[in-house]
Length: 178
Image (tube, rainbow, N blue to C red; front, side, top):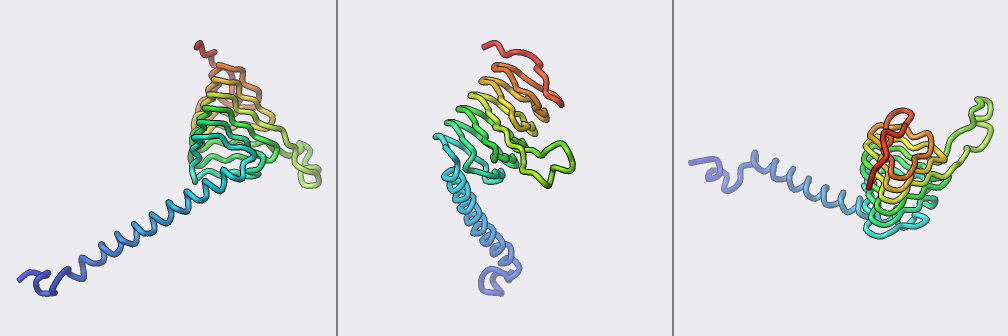
C-alpha cells in the first residue's frame, strides 16, 4: 500500500506545494491587475498621451501632469522621469530601462539650495529616438529626431537630429545617414 492509498488521497506533504502554487497564481493575477490599473491611471494623468504607448508599471514619474507622450512610445522598467519643468516625448521614442530624465535642478550656490525654489527647464525628446539603458538627460536638453543616446550616457547639451551620442558627458559619435 502506498502513501496515497493509506491517506485516502493526496498526502499532506504534497498539499503544501499545491497550496503555495495556488496562492502564487492568485497573488500574481492580483498584482498584474494592480499594475494594469496603475499604468491606466498614470496615462490619464499625463498632460497628453498618444496611442499604443507602453509604460512599464515599474517606472516612476513625478509631476505626471507635466508629461506629454506621443504615439508608439515605450518607457521601460526602472526609468525615472522628473517632469515638473515639462517633459515632451515624441512619437516612436524608445526609452530603455534605468534611464533618468529630469527637468528640474537646484541652484548652484549652496546657500540658495534650500532657500529658493528649484530651477525648471523643459526636456524634449524628439521623434524616433532611442535612449539606451541607463542614459541620463539633464534639464533643458533637446534630443533631435532620429537620434540615439548610448547606454550610460549623460546628456548635458542638446543632441542634433540623426546623431549617435555616447559618454559622460555625451558627445556626438557620428551622424546617422538615413
